[in-house]
Image 1: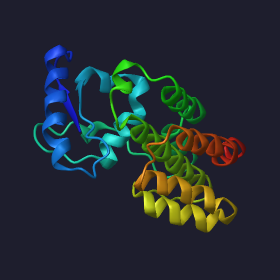
Image 2: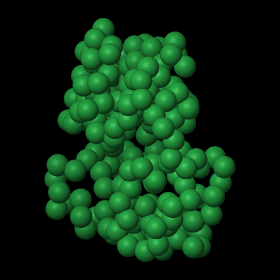
Image 3: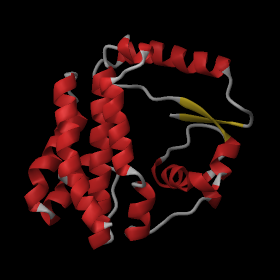
Image 4: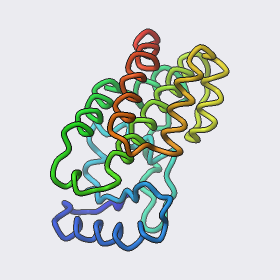
Length: 198
């Protein structure tokens, strides 16, 4: 969830985000993470925020306030969108891997941290699978199961890896070694396929 502010977020906003997480996460034990953040509206005007604007345009639901997405671009499924959604996929996975192996103090005190990282990595891999599909045909979905099915249909040789990504997305591991092994396997399989496609 994102709250778009007409000012720079401050420490009080961070405390509010934490209070919302603390209140609602215990009520939903199967929820890996309640992700909530405050964003200044100017951030969405940045030329580097095109990916974020696309996600707001296509995948968001307005809960309250003004609809800011009317002027945002909506790209058709294809190579341009594939590249927009998955810029720096290797760097992102390497960052998640490093975060698991070298957590900061806050992460060390979070018993779900490895699960959150494994789920984030799996989400990136499945979105990368979507981008690989988009290079071949005009297909777009945000539903991970649908992405897995379409990718597996077009790339049956990689079905096992895509299935592992879907499993990590649905039931992320909390084991460091398993999470690292998953990321390493995706780097030499799905990421390698993406390298060749892009």
